Length: 176
Image (cartoon, rainbow, N blue to C red; front, side):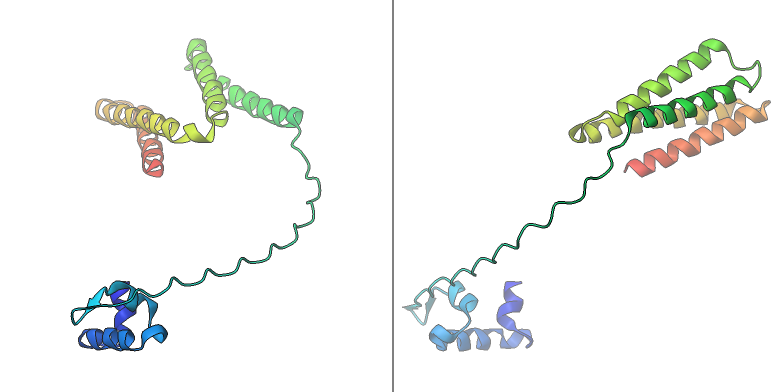
């Protein structure tokens, strides 16, 4: 800060004496102190010359070219994604007859579309996308709270509602 620079390590009472000392020293006085005072005892205080710029640092030689890194194989990454999706679908199918085919199809399409949308977004659009996902998580949390209120006879529904609220809360808090 400017006052701390002028005052130095002394107390606030010695600030003016330090300032006067720098002004009386002339060219050898502190340039900051001499720059902020325009007149003293009715006389114009000459402005000190601007400090000389620091010399530019010599450029270091460019580092050696890094070794060619392995590029990710698109076939391998697609294969891994397909295997994971297949395992998830198989797990959902073996859950029993409680999962309707239309709901499973909607869930899978939403998951695939969400995956493509999130990983394909440009860096400039990341913040708007996250605000939308936070809004969706807010709606999921509200739905989970309503389900917890109304699922008095089903413990499975209550557990799923608690999981939905907890997952939504983690996403909402993590987004801020």
